[in-house]
Image 1 (cartoon, helix red, strand yellow):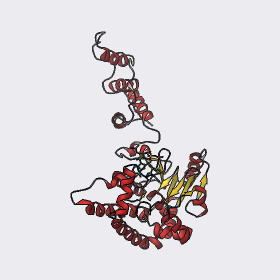
Image 2 (spheres, rainbow, N blue to C red):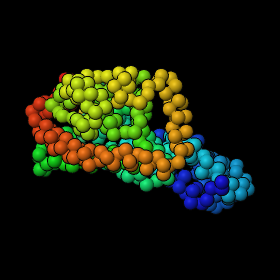
Image 3 (cartoon, rainbow, N blue to C red):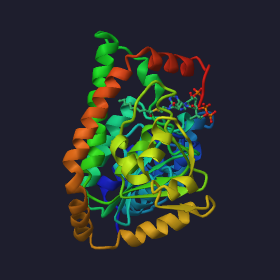
Length: 350
Ligand SMILES: CCCCC/C=C/CC(=O)SCCNC(=O)CCNC(=O)[C@H](O)C(C)(C)COP(=O)(O)OP(=O)(O)OC[C@H]1O[C@@H](n2cnc3c(N)ncnc32)[C@H](O)[C@@H]1OP(=O)(O)O
């Protein structure tokens, strides 16, 4: 397919958005292709020998000779997209904490704060809400959530508790509960098959939400940990309802109240995980499977999910509201505040 002038301009704009500098050589190549595509063969006077930067530009542009404008435009678009981080496409532009891509009828939402173990900060909650709403309306058949780096997610970013608004901690807790309710609500209402690819350890809310997914595939490196009592907090993500149903009330208590950490194999035996894969083949095997799922008739999948979920929707929203209200109270407790202070002052880690 021929790249249009618009595509070309988009590609040039993407270069400005790259997180990693593509390097001078690549930038010079793009510059000259851009000049060729917009102005034709080199028309600038040859700079003096000591004007090193402009000389390099002139040399590179001049070397393109009479390359047609259209060819330069096409090459430039291709050049720049190959510099973009793998798996990134135009759809991901604008997200700070996610990489969102669509390919083969699959929308992939990748948590992208690997240096913070993909902890969910306030921005990430908002961006996931946005990405899920967009995915529910796009032309993909299924949606996948996964993590970048060695963790799936370390759960709520504990520094979320540090930014206190003028209304004090009460206002902070109230706003947190409103955001959490909307966030979890998007998972309850998501209309297409939603699949978690748990690439590594999962903590807190990233675990509880799994009960709202339609399939959960895990690497054998993944672990599942909900240390709510340790943090002076209480379950969210509808887990107080979904976990006892999935794994029996006693097993749910072990996880949600006593903070027992499960291996991927244990989580699979208890029904939280659909299937476990060796880490070495995890990506390949799961993506092969997902691509096959995505070829199934999308309307049939959507309607089948709807009939399964609809029976539970009202209950799930009620549970979500109750959990958020209880948690709002927990965030104001000494138990919770001490746990957060301990983590932030590095006195405690999971
Ligand atoms: C709108 C609000 C909704 C709220 C919903 C509530 C949800 C409840 C939960 O999710 S409870 C779970 C909360 N999560 C945790 O308690 C995990 C805390 N993190 C850890 O214990 C450890 O970081 C670890 C075990 C996940 C990983 O340990 P490791 O030694 O491998 O790595 P580091 O600790 O050095 O981590 C690397 C940097 O990442 C920062 N980080 C990791 N997780 C979090 C987090 N959850 N919150 C804040 N920051 C986190 C860590 O501080 C390091 O940062 P640094 O390099 O700047 O020091």
